[in-house]
Length: 88
Image (cartoon, rainbow, N blue to C red; front, top):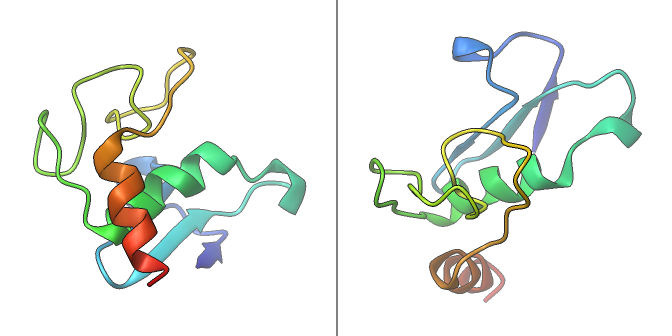
């Protein structure tokens, strides 16, 4: 995982690339890193494929929804299986 003070494309808070890793925009302190953003980006690293576009879910309650919301989000079965496979 790389944490950078630089702005990522489109001013997104993080980016995950399949089999490459995660980049996050540095918060003011390490305690401010949002675990949901890390988990979302980990889904990209694991190869999550979405039903909204190639990479995201259209379900607002899904952790892989395409943007941050105030709605509580949880991982779906695909996310769990793909992330679990990374540990093998």
